[in-house]
Image (cartoon, rainbow, N blue to C red; front, side, top):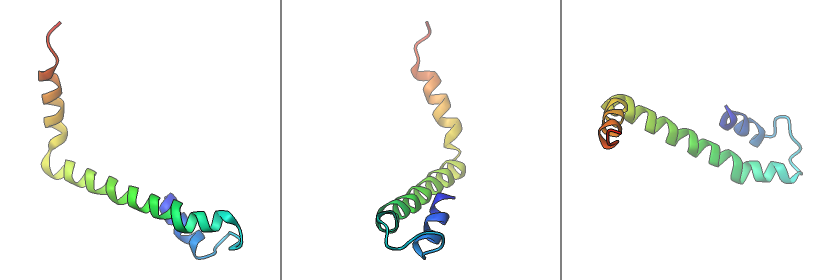
Length: 67
């Protein structure tokens, strides 16, 4: 959601284009949020397609010695 709002702010909706926030948002915050969103989506898609959620849990249980 932050990525989408950042893009709206980048087009000048709801902010003054002469402020430092506008330029930080345009050049740093929004691109970072978009990149994090894409990375999160890629990880979630990869995990759901390979079923690795279950494999990771099984491997973690095997790695813990009985105590």
